[in-house]
Image (cartoon, rainbow, N blue to C red; front, side, top):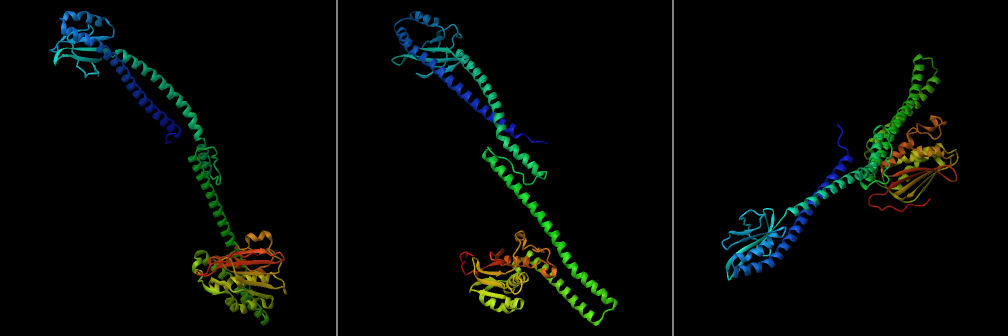
Length: 467
């Protein structure tokens, strides 16, 4: 069941608030105007009473009641004002013909008035040395004033209704224009829900709240798009990883299967048997190396911190211990340039990183050109650089160089280029140490691999060197 429209709700709330405000203003205006009219009428009566009271007082004191008749008749003939006169006992002895016979209203305090039986009443007790001579009241009907108030409220009601109607019409236009950006946000959200990931809502010229809502929807849309793109990329990488791993494993397995089939026939000479055994050993070693690399990458993916056990290392001493192993790979072609530095690293894992990089550089550097290993202080603590004099890295391959099963030279044989996991392992191991690795082409030719590793926790970092 659809909910109430936001536009109608806002317009309804505006009209309700305006209606309450108009009612409050109308009632306040009515009460103030009523008080003003009653006060004005009472002041007129009090002024007249101040003139009439001495005359009546004099007549009551020095004459009989018949002397009051001319005064009272003049007052009785005056339109709008009515008179009541009472004797000292409080009984009416004269009153205007429009009033009920013998009607005696309450006596208000001096200088004030009260409303009684639809009349404004002022009065005064006439005293002589503490003796009451009589009481006089002047009254004025409130009917004309009520008629004025009624006409004013009728006019106010008509104007208030016109204001409500005008505000309602203007509110419809204003609210719709204000909520137009919200409609665009809703449309964009529906497109995102329908699969249009990455769509951006247009919230220009919108109120602040709608701008914030639109920006939140835009961020969500971009995040969803990135998430789906990442998921697709992860699925594609997994598919490619499985395909490449299967292909890499199928080659040695096929070779082993072929050799075993030849051995099963038993038609081999002694020399052929020796050659086939050597070939099977090579394929087995290759398959073992591939499986080991895959297991290493898998463990680094799951818990990289558990695969390294860093400790403070003197880089120059550590490289001096590793130099014989490195010489076994490159012999005299290998050149070491080492400066003192301390690094926070796992000795064995760091050796794996350097040997992978050196082996990669040697395979891409024609003999007898050298491969240079430089080590010393770096921006994170220590830096190891491996430079070769080979053909360099194709620019298109640089962004993908550390991806698994990636080969910069697709035409190179697997025997020469390996499975494409060495540099991926290097990157995973370096990042597990909290470091970073990068590759670039040297201006003078060849490639350069740069590994930055952190210093021990108690040693401050150095500034980024220029190179």
